[in-house]
Image 1 (cartoon, rainbow, N blue to C red):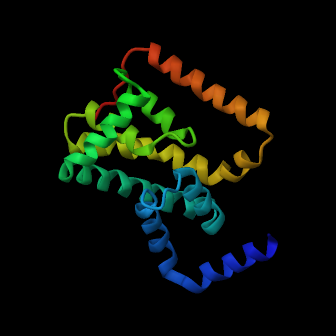
Image 2: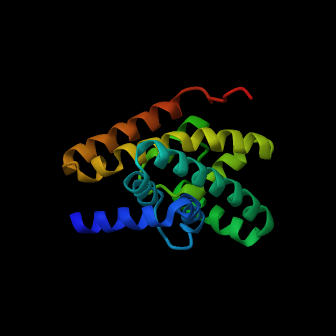
Image 3: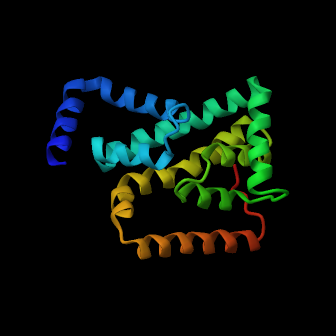
Length: 182
């Protein structure tokens, strides 16, 4: 494993200025490669360190939300498939912006499904991007900084963390609808 990390580090160093744009491109290709968000964000932390990894993850996730919005508008059949998934996973359920932000932190929650919820909650593209950008800050930071630690935690700590996030999600659902001013 140590040799693998050294080889990876030398490969990134050899790529030079191309490494960050290629990594951000990986975020855009991630859905086509069936990679979970958390995997790519953890890779950003391993490859670039906390600060640069968080920045690159934020940029990649923000661009992914931007292109998702354009893609949904251009391809209605894709929107129907995401809506079908929404109806299967959370039928008839409305969630708040705060709940979307909590769900974005939870590993393996469908990122585009949450983007669809944001699209439904917002009035226009500007408001959608505002909430999208706010919503990807925490995943970019948390997955980059603690991704390896979370994946290496004992199962009971991981379960405890997930239960805590589920509790916070439920609490936000009972509160008044939360909207941040633009």
